[in-house]
Image: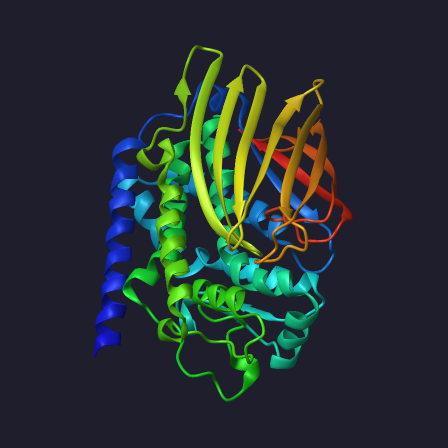
Length: 425
């Protein structure tokens, strides 16, 4: 009876938060698109191939999902009233699309480690979305040979959700997408991300007994409880599912701490429908914060967006923490800078200090970083009415050993991407 009450409380609390957010969107999201959007159209980037070349990576799936969703939401906005538009988007997200990127985040880490799995992301599936098709032996071998990636199986879903929100915040801050076209997706995703971490306060047990057929079991079970248990007790006997009462008092306190810190994800003006603050006709700014678990603990971000004429800059300061130690990081990106009529470039650079062996108990740090460069060559699409331009996109990433959200590998590697961007009026 206690479990049923808890489940009802969590589900109803989540729905209340979600509908408050959507109501918020209906109030603040009625402004027209900026002049930039009307006169230049919108860019919709897609990644055709990423590294590794196995199904889709987290970055690839997130990018493609968001572009497809923006096309859908723009079409709904032109066809229906705001109330109907928001309602349709909310239904589509809750019943169909919302869990896609979360579960694909989990699945992509397994694919990068050459472990086959099946993503079952839909609301009406068992457990409201999960990944299965993996043997216990495969997971045990991963835990013993690559513990940081094993922990990332638990954290990759919220990592994907967090980076989706980060992408959406950048689009709105730079005026590349209107708030009303992203409101339902963005706000429901924020509520869902925070809900994952707040369940510790109501002792909500998603997991029950493990299925008899191990291939039918969720790969990791409860993301937050499972991550906490394995971080503190990496050598305990292996089992997938974790109930709140399976946690030690120290692990429960850690879950509570993650719940409090998850509220940093609400610190952004987009939550109340303000995409940026206009300082002048040429300058706008925005600020936000974020927090999620990572393979060796957790991190908190302070994000800054600066839009000056054609220059779009996003920069961040990041604080990693493992069990007892703090490690600093930061980065800067310049998005879609036009260097000629037909060529745009994007550049991002990241610098970090992280636990030397990406371990929860490490006391020594290791300095590393990453650089990502994208070049887009646009040509006219004269044969189509709404499609104005199409680009060929080539990207390269180089990173040292370390954790970078959305990047498939924790090890040092050089990666390449191929894609296209469609500019639609």
